[in-house]
Amino acid sequence: MLTRPDVAVVGAGPVGLAIAWRCAVNGLRVVVHDPAPGSGASRVAAGMLAPVAEAYFGEHELTGLLAESAARWPRFAAELAEAAGTQFGYRTEGTLMVGLTGDDLAEARRLWSYQQGLGLPITPLRPSQLREREPALAPRVRGGAVAPGDHQVDPRRLVTALRAAAERAGATLVPGPVARLADVDARVTVVAAGCGAAALTGLPVRPVKGQVLRLRAPGRAAPDFRHVIRGYADGESVYLVPRADGEVVVGATVEERSDTAVTAGAVLRLLRAAVDLLPDLAEYDLVEAAAGLRPGTPDNAPILGPLPGHPGVLAATGHHRHGIVLTPVTADLITELVVTGQADPLLAPFTPERFTAASTEKERTWN
Ligand SMILES: Cc1cc2nc3c(=O)[nH]c(=O)nc-3n(C[C@H](O)[C@H](O)[C@H](O)COP(=O)(O)OP(=O)(O)OC[C@H]3O[C@@H](n4cnc5c(N)ncnc54)[C@H](O)[C@@H]3O)c2cc1C
Image (cartoon, rainbow, N blue to C red; front, side, top):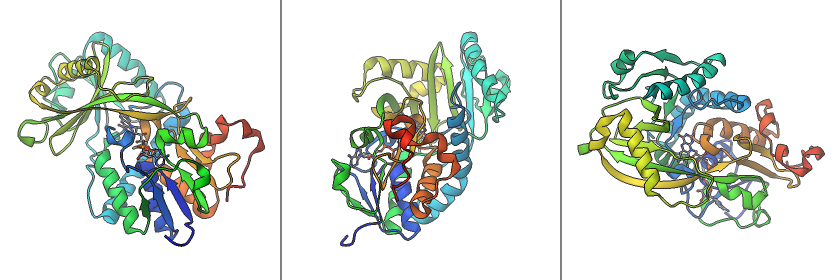
């Protein structure tokens, strides 16, 4: 590109590519820098769009943003499928949450009553009602609940679709890393580099390791369950995400580590919990064991908005466990900021200023 771009996006994960797509659709000249697009956390992510199941104690504002983004997913998915000319495994069967033992169920119920107290759509189910919905569940499962609005998408296919949509809209991918923000020449720079954002911006984004397995139904048939299943099995937390092509994602560990080694112990615990909930999974092929690094933040919420002390630089990072569900709202809010200079009030709790020493300066000179 010979002329100076309007927008340089650093990072071609789901967040960066969605911002690039939306900015390009708005007529801006966009470049995206990444040495290995789609190689970050999204490469291993399960792709649950789970504003209810992921509503945890003490994360009220984050829960609101998750719900807002989940509500934007149907339209986002339709527009992306149209723009990219491809599908990406978006499924809306809902999520079952289950407890294997009485203790597991008691633990799960505490969270469900908190979620119900927030007015989130979640309905307790008796074991017989659970098995009506998913006959493959183990007879031992003591009880559960359904969150019909918690959906799923295949993150690898999502990244492929977002890249196609961004390039069709005119964005240019530049293969290579950005070492320093000063090396980028654009009117606005958006740092959407996942865990790589810490080195570029000094923001407190830390890697949180997650190990994940991928199984495949024999003969590539569709798995014999349709819902996302999340549960506790003898104190072990696990989720099972079925894809139409036969894949089942089993996840995930949550570890304060920055390596991507796969450990025997983690594989053992994940498989044991998975088979406890769905015994038929023991017959599936184990096709992949991988680890990825979630871009975590001190309050588990993303960091979105102008970077204090760096005029023209926006952060869109720190999406931790929620980058796939938060992709639509992040893309909308950051694109609006780039295009109009206006910050949607939704951004207020998530600005970088909450973590920077310069927060008192209230800088607004990025544009
Ligand atoms: C095990 C696991 C399970 C998960 N499950 C879910 C889930 O079910 N639902 C959900 O919503 N989220 C889930 N997540 C979280 C989700 O994957 C992340 O929040 C999301 O991928 C963040 O997107 P991103 O684009 O910001 O970063 P990433 O996906 O990490 O992508 C960052 C990109 O930036 C590039 N990059 C880094 N540094 C530089 C640099 N200096 N210059 C240029 N490019 C750079 C990388 O190469 C990479 O392509 C999961 C994560 C893990 C690890």
